Image 1 (tube, rainbow, N blue to C red):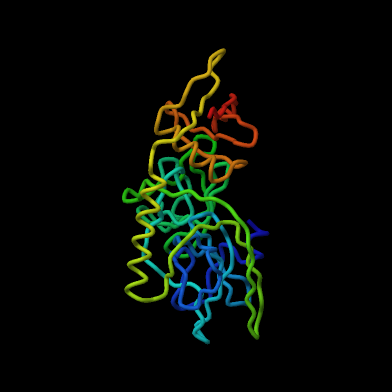
Image 2 (image 1 turned 90 degrees about the horizontal axis):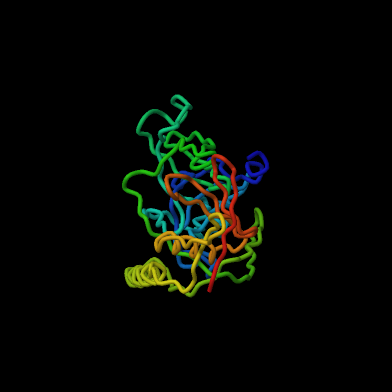
Length: 284
């Protein structure tokens, strides 16, 4: 994580009213169009020596935004919204605790301490920031180990997104940085008023309802000897949603008491413990 930390990712913030791992939405000085895809995000760091705060939106888009307490410039604002999951076991912004394979003594601050996920790696490694401001990397599915686990009150539905691209540039007397947007979705104005907050809630509820529709028109299958077998309905939907989000990425799933990674780029299913691979395919 050294190169990421050099950029300010996973480092504690130099702020009074915002912390690493906080959940945020666009603030009163937002000027970056739809880079947030109308969703909440998670603070994952701060660029060294600047007021630029790293945010990963629930769409997966990562960028920096101004949060200047001295000059009262707030592109983002703190909110109290849990991360919503749909096609993944875990995601940035989720709350976790130590799991059944925990071997790190009290590195988390002690039993029952809650942490916030700052990064999910494709191999099943998870970067977590604990309540007492210590950060570490742990296994959640990697090699079949679960050193951390989701908190019991975590949600189990998560939207997925389409992609586009735009850019925006912010400048001040102290620094400048450029935004590259890779996730676009129609959204409502989220100015700090009761009316706009109600519009935001309505839009969000409609969007979650739409992506939670379990009717997909494709079939995911895996090779079993000389036969191809179809995944059950719930797994089929999860795989398809993950595929639509990132067609060259991977997704983690539990299947027949084992943990697997499905790699969409190579279309193989890999057992995270034994590393055995079998082919998968997508039929429309």
